[in-house]
Amino acid sequence: VIFAILLLMLAMAGALLRFTDRARKLAELQMQFVAGVSHELRTPLSVIRTAAHNLRSGVVTGGKQIERYGVLIVEEAERLTNIVEQVLRFASTKAGSPLGGREQTSVVSLIDSAIQATAASVAESGCHVEKHVGENLPPILADPVALKHALQNLLSNAAKYGAEGGWIGVTAASSADESGVEIRVVDRGAGIPADELGQIFDPFYRGKRAIEDQIHGTGLGLNLVKRIVEAHQGTVTVTSSPAQGTEFLVRIPALPVEQRDEFADSISRG
Ligand code: ADP
Image 1: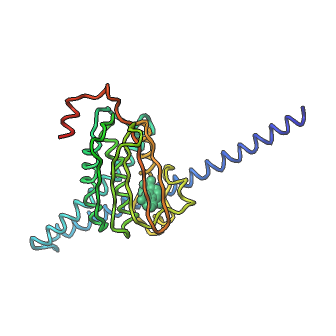
Image 2 (image 1 turned 180 degrees about the vertical axis):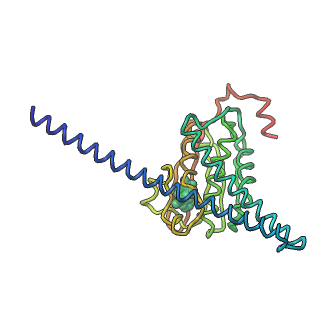
């Protein structure tokens, strides 16, 4: 009996140690997150403040210069909006399901609108997007806003971390057994180190290079992608090789034929 009690106490001590270690790591990540987000907010705010100050004090004159300042303010304001939206979305999905209403959705239009929404950051990175979409993709049952946000995250990550490759591939195809749709977002960047692959979907996690090179981000993007995709009964996986690039594969089940709305389907087919 004493031996059993000792064993139990040992197991409990081990579990407590593991729990404390995890709590410490999470607290560390959260501190990094707060510092990172504060930095992320401070940069665009000071750019906007300085630009507005220069405009008001008459330092900036001439239509061309004023236009340049206008573009700068819009870009930085968009960056601020994206950060705030990401954090708010993360907070609200923590509190409940990451999905709003679901409806029959065309994957093609979802991909097009995600590419359009990230066009500015992709152009800024110097990448070009190559899109290949299979014919007769089945519709899916999706929250189009949430799923578009997930695809946008993958695309803007490819632009942020894969810029040196200059190329981003987006493909969509029916899965081999036709039970779903497979969406791939591929880049030819530096790739993800093997020891980081297991952590990139954790909330607040940022890769070593992202921190060292001060690439902007909150560490919430991929966690949101995973939660949004899984709420659609889908999966997201990653494969990456150093110096060759990274591929994210999102699988979403197709809407069963008997549930398809023929009218909506014909509209999405155009
Ligand atoms: P963030 O981009 O804000 O850091 P994410 O959750 O989107 O947060 O990504 C987590 C980490 O995964 C990033 O910090 C980066 O290290 C790594 N990562 C994500 N996408 C890529 C990619 N396409 N190529 C290389 N690394 C990536």
